[in-house]
Image 1 (cartoon, rainbow, N blue to C red):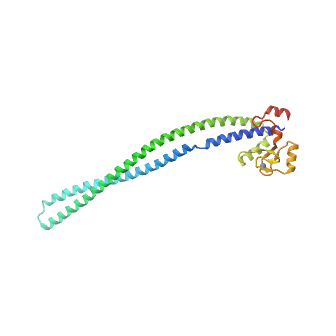
Image 2: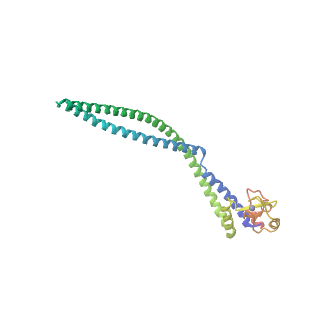
Image 3: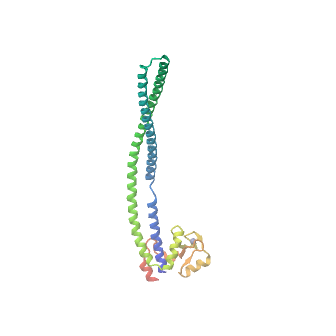
Length: 253
Ligand SMILES: [Zn+2]
């Protein structure tokens, strides 16, 4: 048995564990995703409504200012009436007063309409704010849960990474480099066992000659299909897969 292969098998195990933890860390829970989506949706609606209300509020203020001015003008025009003697002039002024009154009434109606609209929109806004408060609470809780989980995972990953670094130091640099390169290219698996003539990395049969060689010597071989480092499974996995005994492996090699 080769120390390097025994260690690479162990390294591969650690790398897969780390990969699994990294994936759990990257996987945002459904409940959190849903809460976030709902929250963002409501925030969008709220911003939209707020903008519309502000616009209508501004319009209302403008109309009120205009109305104030027109009421002032109406009073001045009405005051002029008393100073006028000529009938024709009087008639013209009367018509002007009527016109001001008419447009003022229109403006008053428009202001009323705006106020009603603003009231309705504000009611809607309050409802959305209430909903948003509820969903924000849910989001915060879910987010906290996920953050705590991530923290735990991070700690586990750090522990495993430390273990992995120690193990990697013991592997010859050439073969380690090859393992790293393939692992990165091939979905996290750099070394694979061969059993019954089949590479378990890519599930393809290796050429018969190579299969014979792999059983005869325990040098490094490479799968011609997936390029992973391969080894004869029965040779290395006589012990249970979970706990390869490194000391024993070392002593017998
Ligand atoms: Zn293969």
